[in-house]
Image 1 (tube, rainbow, N blue to C red):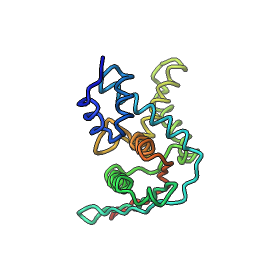
Image 2: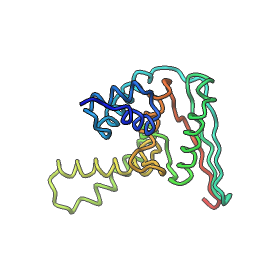
Image 3: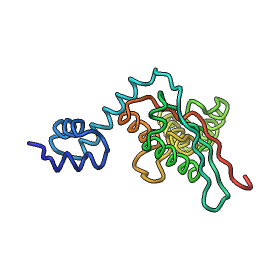
Length: 197
């Protein structure tokens, strides 16, 4: 099936990716836009993995104070070059992430920042919660693994569903931006302040 210019333009409008990338994805997906988006997402992940070893020397500090003046966020996002750090799309992403942190209140950037002691306490809590369930050990293990993943969604920024588009995580948006811009980008740290907390 031949892919039309309208299909390519529609996919480009949704993803912001170059026309040729959109055309290749639509060709690969047989003209199905949803499948093409998945193809692009997988390619973006591959591109992001290739850039993982690069060094980030530039970036910006984004601040956001909620309109009521009661909650604020400082966020550090790094990238490879100053050119990207000044890019409007990069700045927009930083602003959206700061806004997300204000609303979702994560504790950590990623699950590898969660202290081992906290993870052990959480596992013990889930085990105690499930001990009288009568389920076999291997089933219990899978249930607890699911609960741990759900816990990461609550406390880790990159695992949280994005407040403006819950179908994607913040990590998915980061991967998409890396694929689009072509440089390594890292959310390194943040501080969230709320009156009374």
